[in-house]
Length: 290
Ligand SMILES: Cc1cc2nc3c(=O)[nH]c(=O)nc-3n(C[C@H](O)[C@H](O)[C@H](O)COP(=O)(O)OP(=O)(O)OC[C@H]3O[C@@H](n4cnc5c(N)ncnc54)[C@H](O)[C@@H]3O)c2cc1C
Image (tube, rainbow, N blue to C red; front, side, top):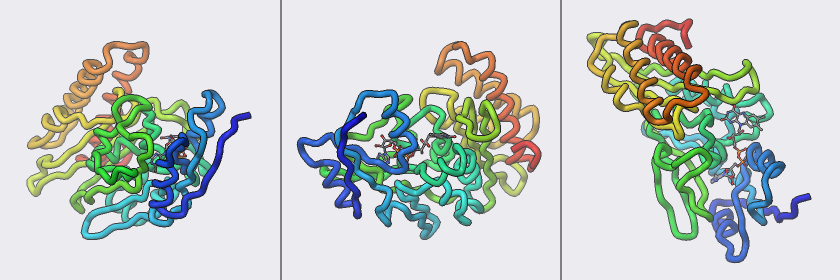
């Protein structure tokens, strides 16, 4: 039986002070859906859990002046039910809706998903497309780091001991933007992503692609935008041939990053397919594909 302390933080200041108390190895606890699983297989790596899940500011989703702020302890269920997110960044709501089952979505949080930094973390591809920034607070002060840079390798981040993700911010995309999240798992429910993709984009008045962001999940070591593929698409008229070329380029860049692995024969077909489907959904309004 593991032996550790547990403290409940009521405010962000309280949490930061507990996390930075000298002589204690304290870590944040939000929903516990990763921490308690890891505790079953790893030696104890902390001696106190600081529960940040009851801090009111960290539980809020706010929108002001076109900027969204998601508290670090916002649960996926809250994101799924939020009307602004559903309407303006539906791929983020869809990603949250795909996570685990109801019990996991009721407990799991954005802060935990980012800090745990699994290659298959489902909220990250959409957050990366939105150029979301994580706001970190510690005894040393505050800093803001793009989510795309915060995750440095599978299960590794730039988050330092004593730092807390208080909130995550992003600017809402243009109202006309359409977005799509597709996830492939081993089964339809309670399934971890084997591969996923988040795409958002717009067409100009002449029907030409003028804005697109693409981030696959579980394809390369960390969730990053495939900017070369975005450049291939920008300025072009949407069509199946263009999307097939973009899919090929996406796959070539994935393999360049990972090398050929046991999973490559599967992933090269699957990634091209979900990329083409997401692009068709967004730019050809093919509702059946997302
Ligand atoms: C059955 C099951 C199914 C799952 N399915 C999915 C899935 O489909 N997709 C998916 O992406 N994930 C899935 N997960 C993983 C998990 O639910 C998510 O990663 C979740 O977002 C973790 O959030 P949490 O609040 O539970 O984190 P916790 O377990 O509380 O914490 C996880 C890590 O993050 C740190 N942390 C937590 N909050 C903060 C913060 N605010 N600032 C800094 N560090 C923090 C903790 O110290 C810990 O290191 C699943 C897990 C289970 C058990």
